[in-house]
Length: 491
Image 1 (cartoon, rainbow, N blue to C red):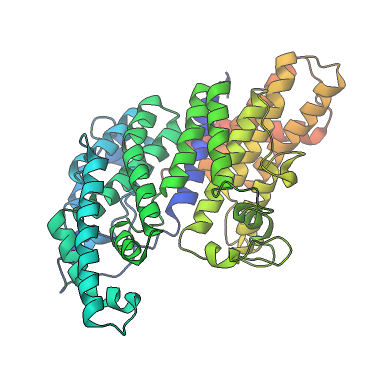
Image 2 (tube, rainbow, N blue to C red; image 1 turned 135 degrees about the horizontal axis):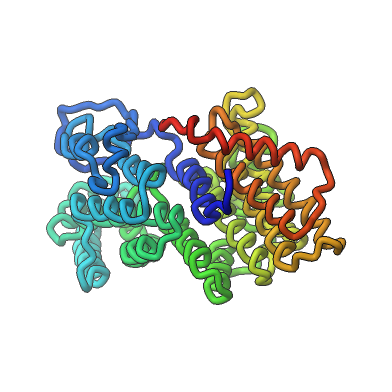
């Protein structure tokens, strides 16, 4: 293979694997579909089916970004529609398409799912909320008078059907479906923007993210005010799904994507501020963050994510960690924070560490270890699970960041240059060793490209590659890439 590889595209090839791993596991969980609620006589197995398109579909991906084979299942109704994993379409574009085709896929979902954000969306939502709340509180007062010995909790539980009738009449109930649609499509745009590093996709994601995120914050604030608000919020708030980003993780991801695209101080500092706010969301200087406890303790002894002990855990940590979605959110947080720190390091933009454990070398090395621990406990040690793409990707970014500073100065006689060469190639070699060229060709190929490109950058500076293992890794990478086209069999 000759010529300089497209490093941006190279990074994207790996990032798709990390995005899929973080946002779609487990793939066997079927999605919530409000249409199914109308068919009480229909019982479907809760098994999700992933659509991948045919060779003919892939050949026409730009001209026909939403093939009939997908649309047929999407519009079919019944169990076929219920079991279809909707994120399959954008994942397909991330593997075989372009930013433009992925944007068309997002627009398809917007249109077909009725995802609209009209002017005044949030104000109308809040008015419907207040109208429902006033009528529900009046209903509660009447029931209290009739049942003076019953607790509010029991009364509200018995009143839920009437509460939802009130929500239906005031227009509040419809916002659950609208927020659910906004959450899904914004997440799909975000995944595609992260993969392609595309400004149009980023803008589309933000257009849907902002109103949904602010509405989510509004519901969270209301839920803390009292028992009536809590019940209503729980019924209106979109339910967490394993193939959708939470609004908080989406906000983090969009900020890091913005920094990756802009590559300037302003965007990196903005993303840094957002990660800090989510690291200590209560705004207090507490001794430990739940996210820090997670990074230190998760998967240490087994595959348990929510391990805690009295030395480093805030009160109630285990209960909070076991809430639906925290594990995926915590993994996503550390992945995005590490990406940001490595980008800042590559551009020589200083960032203060989040906490004392990260003061020496940042969070990336600990995050790599976190993902490796998880994969190790889940079967990698027995050859039953592949290398985690998030760890491999962060290793590549770390090696590239180290190399970037050295080859920019291009002083092969300096001790700093020689140290950077060894560190960079050693890190990239580790990424190559983790990725499996047979089971993970989509992961191994960009690893080989990164290694070859970085090696050639060093030699172009006149560097003498000191170790045989680095030269062998280069020869193996080059040989693999020479035959890679013949191995590129679509999954």
